[in-house]
Image (cartoon, rainbow, N blue to C red; front, side, top):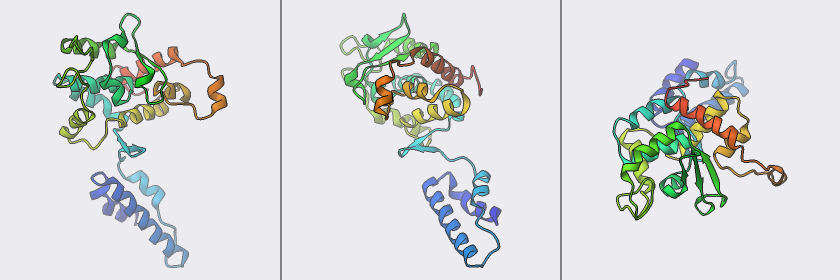
Amino acid sequence: EGPLIRECLLPIWLEKPETARRVKQRIGVVLDWAYANGMRATEAPMRSLGRALPRQPKRDNHFAAMPYEDVPSFIEHLRKRESVARLALEFLILCSSRSGEVRGAKWAEIDLKNKLWTVPAERMKVGKEHIVPLTDAAVDVLHRARPFYAPCSDLVFPGRNVMRPMSDMTLLKILRYAKLPYTVHGFRSSFRDWAAEQTSYPGEVAEAALAHTVANRVEAAYRRTNYLDKRRELMRDWADFCTNKGGLN
């Protein structure tokens, strides 16, 4: 019966993932009730069924994330045409940054000599300055963005009105035009999944790259490093993966 359930779910499994998951769960409840009442010989085969269905987009707090395996081909898609929005989205992916941090980035925050981007505390979600190590791929994006420079605003990725950052919707439209069901924020989850599944970097290094706060106050008080050197290596490996230089580890 596993194949029968699979055939039932397949038409909606990727198109309507949330609905499909609920249907799968309810089928399991019905079959388990039947087993408990002696109407069938075995429990519902839901665990093995999960392995027979294609992988759905992962969600992080309702932010649909592109599977990290698909990110390199999406980077190739972005590079087929050059625009401020496409450059901003590529930079966002390579740096695993939040949309607002990238859209509000200014050239004064960029240190090309030392390959560092210092995001001031007032522009960070957690209210703490964040230093992003810039990979060669990220620096390349900045060089390609330079022709769009507007001295009056100093924005790295200016919007249609150069005095203001582009809207988050401008970045999301790139995904929608490509008919992809993901969110811009979801790329941070793509990075986190890749780091966990394909690298041996400690989790705290990946969390530092995402500028996440440490939940444990005692641990936060004793942690005196932002793991900059390790994060530089981590982001280099991520950039190599995204640009097909490193492949899967």
